[in-house]
Length: 363
Image (cartoon, rainbow, N blue to C red; front, top):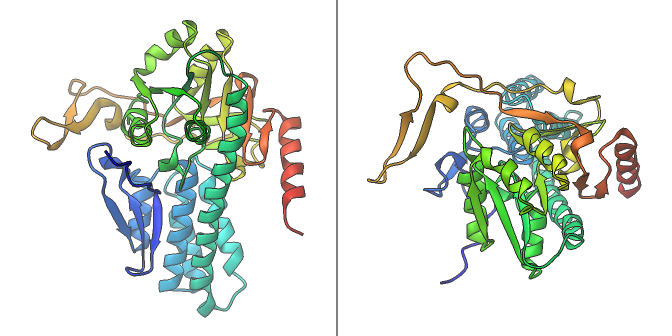
């Protein structure tokens, strides 16, 4: 059987003058590309989680702002479109970061030049994300190589931080893909990630396509796996990292960090520099998105006839609390894997990272 086509999560179509993204709400049962042409379609795709993952949200928003400026390059529309895109989801800092990058690149230009300049900037951010994630993978591979023992490396992850959450490679999964490509035996414990099941629906789908052995497990079984010494390390992504090293990631990450610490298992967060909020002193200052309670009370899947259906799990009148993220204190994080290397999750470690970022900038 031939290997599946190598995919990316987002591409610009000059033919259709539109951004094309994978509708992630249809995975793993259907691979469908969406064309985004209007500001409203970009906002809906981000808000409805057709695109998700902090880096991908940011890049999508950059293209959305560019497309809005190509239709109306006025300063008023720059402010309107930027505000509309920024309001879609509150937690991932990459959203504001990408919008600020595009705005800075075009605001001083003549109106007629803004649209194409914004599109070029969005394309640049896309290319930079690919390079950053590839570098995260290389630095993570060095860490994994130091953990090798008899048999395959067993890595636990949570939610989806693969190429579906970025453009290519991913963050938490980039070291896994690099290890697999280098011939290092690796196996991934994939927690289902209730309530939207991004682990089961997205991460497992990605890994299976790449030929990486993986096993889907219930969220509540992860502590037992860590206690049984069948996990060599945990690697997760981050939607926002505070200046003190606290990590905000998908709800349930904190519990894995606690269990990893209790059982002496290294716990890493993999993230590009765009995910660090240098103005956020600690995780206490990170806004936590509260999503619709129906995500907890119902489940969507494919029935035996191939139809996608939503089924209510809870009784009528049941209420639910549905925070999308939690914060893992820096004290529980072994290290931050970035495109610049691995750093200690502390104010001093983040200062070292910032210094390295400054030294690597072109003069």
